[in-house]
Length: 181
Image 1 (cartoon, one colour):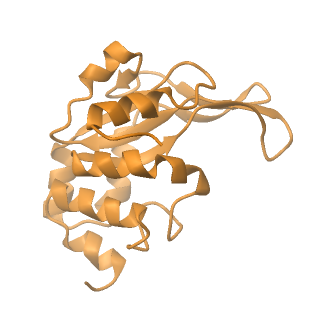
Image 2: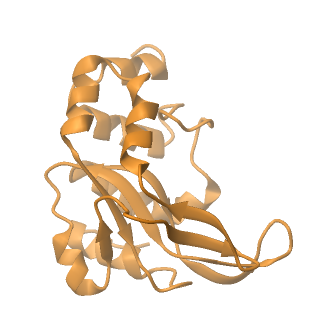
Image 3: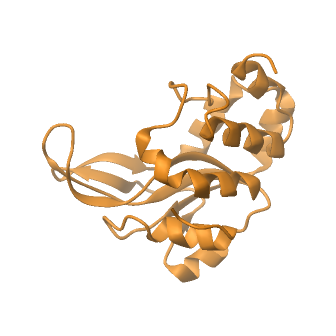
């Protein structure tokens, strides 16, 4: 197979990109474009099954988290989070999730806070997110792979209710025909 970076460089279709993302999520591939670690964060472990089902359904996951509230951040200040998934999609229609209370953003017109610590935003989705992700992948993919990514739809699925841990993930799992967790 060669190196993990070579695998990304050879990927020439959206389906191949999704297969590589799934291999990364399963721990079989030691890199993901733009991610500086050889594996996912511990907080992704509970989401793995839904993310893998998403990869099989045409979702290339880029960033995600569960919602949460009442925890203390690394600096001891109280923290709350919104559940979200940012991804490129092809062949997957997220619109049915809107009827289940999930907000779908193709491109945020203004900043949407996703994490607040001590009353200050520490994580947000904002304008230009799609272009920023494309820029990250530009150096990692061959021209055909980049063209496939550019042709895909960019979406962010967000549960706007602060602290709700599982709603987005349970609804996405149901839409994908899998279970969470």
